[in-house]
Image 1 (tube, one colour):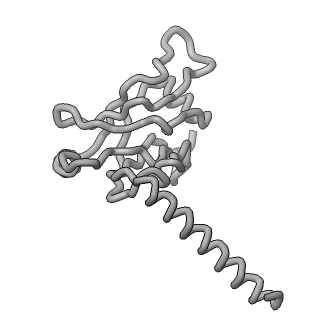
Image 2: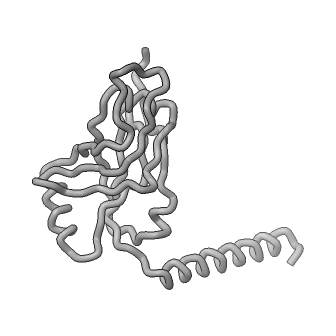
Length: 158
């Protein structure tokens, strides 16, 4: 079988960018068992409720849902088990320092295959307040209206 190249998305957490202000992003490998990888290859996973924690100098991804592999046997995995993330020691040290600040958390933004290996894009993020979310929606709507007007003008209809 040919070696995989490039980046193939499995699942993205679109709600994360709405609920959090992203400060910094990190790419981490994930420790998985065989049936989890097979289930991910089918594109089945959910990272909506997932979050990462730092315990004893190691980073763990919690509440990530990878459903059981349909053709799996009694060796199948537990769908919501805690999974270890693979980061460099220096990156973990930086994360520990930044997480000690109040209101900052580690949120997964996406999961993907990079050259055949499962990776998670983690964001160091700060929770947004309701008024921040409304401002973002208002900005997006205003930009959409501007783009429509520019498009109509370019077509000679405005």
